Each structure stands twice: as structure tokens, then as C-alpha cells.
Image 1 (spheres, rainbow, N blue to C red):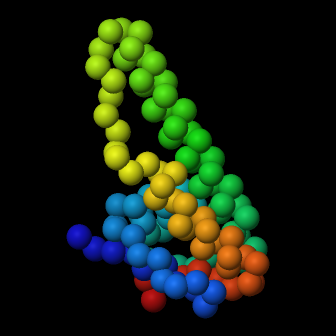
Image 2 (image 1 turned 90 degrees about the vertical axis):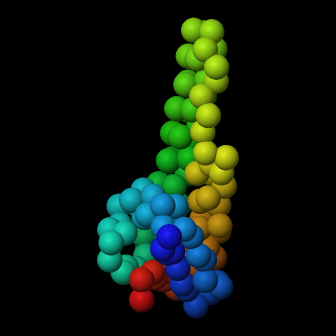
Length: 108
């Protein structure tokens, strides 16, 4: 399985398995199939997009659990590691990089 390695001059490298890295980049509207950059001026929007995606995933899962319970069915199973947990280190990286005014790159 391949990896995504996110780099910045402010933080250590952040390594994610391909499915997680791809999902993060897609949420940000970035093409995961090519190398790229997130500039400091994009980071506030990126953080908001990730937080909105986390809330949307959690709401969707809660609705699915409630619907299953209402129909007397077993609760659906979701990934043990949620988007909230997977995105937290990336959000922290973005927060540190925006303060330091440095970009985050991947695939280079």
C-alpha cells in the first residue's frame, strides 16, 4: 500500500496510508494523483473544510445508527478510526504552518 508524505519546514513529516491521504486531499479539493502544495492563505479554508467533513461524517453515522435502532436492526459498523482522528494531525500541521507562514507539500 502506498503512502502520502506531507512535508513542511515548520513540522515533521506527516505520513498517511494512501486511502486516508487521498480522502483528506479530496476534501480539500486537491488532486491526490499529483504532487501539490497548500499555501498559507489556503490553510484556514482547508481547516474549515476538514472540520465540516468531520461533522458531516459524524452526523451521517448517527443518523444511520438511529435508523437501525428504530427498525430494530443491529447498529451499522464504521471504520474504527474516524475521519476526526485521521484528520486531527493534519489540522494541527496546518495550524502550525499558517502561523509560521510556510506551505505544506506532498509528492515531491
